[in-house]
Amino acid sequence: MTIAIIGLGKMGSRIAIKLHVEKHQVFVWNRSKAPAEELQLKIKNLKFKIDEGNFIIADSILDLVKKLKSPRVVWLMLPAEKQLKPQSMSYQNI
Image 1 (cartoon, rainbow, N blue to C red):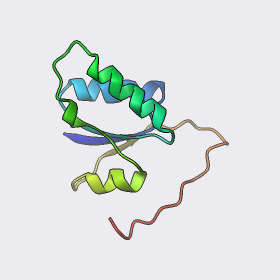
Image 2 (image 1 turned 180 degrees about the vertical axis):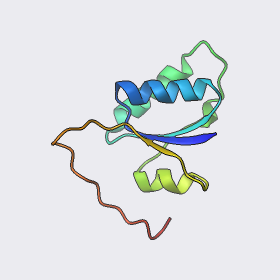
Image 3 (image 1 turned 30 degrees about the horizontal axis):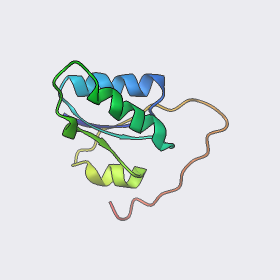
Image 4 (image 1 turned 60 degrees about the horizontal axis):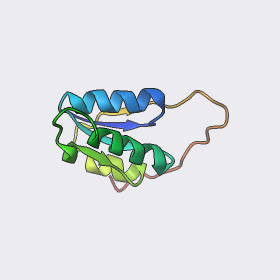
C-alpha cells in the first residue's frame, strides 16, 4: 500500500514508522522540515531491515499529492488548535 501522512507530531510520526516497518510505501510532509528529517534518521537506525527508498519526504503538499498514484490515500494528523491557518493551494495541476 502507498500512503501519505501529513503531520509528523507524536502520533503521525509513530504511524509513519509502523506503516513503513510493515513494508508500506510512506510519503510524508510536515509544515516544518525538522520532524520529517528526524523521522528519516530514526528509520535509518531501526533494527529492522527496511527499504529506505519507501520513505519519501515531500517538499510541499502539492508535491506530496503529485507523487501519489491514484487512488490517493492521505492521512492527516493535525492538532485541533485555533492557531492553525489553512494553507491555500490549487488542485488544477494535479
